[in-house]
Amino acid sequence: MRQFTRKAAIMVLTVAVIAGCHKDDNNNGGSTKTQLLTSGSWKLTSEYFDVALDVNGDGRAENEVINVLPSCFTDNLISFKGDGTVTRDEGASKCDPSDPQLIETTNWKFSDNETKIMIGDPGYEDVGQLVELSATVLKIKLGDPGSGITLTFAH
Image 1 (tube, rainbow, N blue to C red):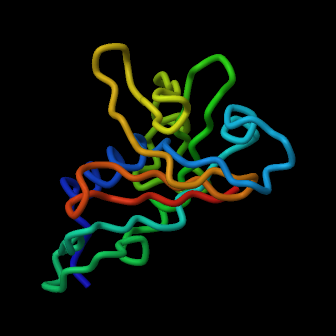
Image 2: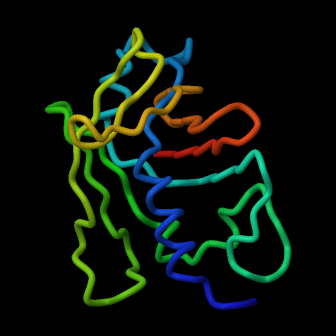
């Protein structure tokens, strides 16, 4: 397998940070969407592209790319806070040992009756559609139908 390119890594990390939209689940024990979202750290478990991509340069295009990403990306943790901030942490392993443990802090908020989530600094937010949000699953759809990305996170 070819070396994971820095450009592909940046793209994947950008997509992962943007991920923050999900639909409320009927079995959430009465918790609000904010309570569910802010109840702990989320780890990426699936990154599905509607249009297949050759993310790692091996000549094969894949829709599901989580298995071709290095563990230093897939073990990252995203934490949504009740104060409207979201952080991205390197997790257990770092791609570059000199990188800081806390990768990024930015803002988040729900929109459209909590059916969408906006992540980023005011005026520069990325918007995702909430597909699923439960006590254990966060699923966000980014982009246009047929050419988007669905990110799934777990506690």
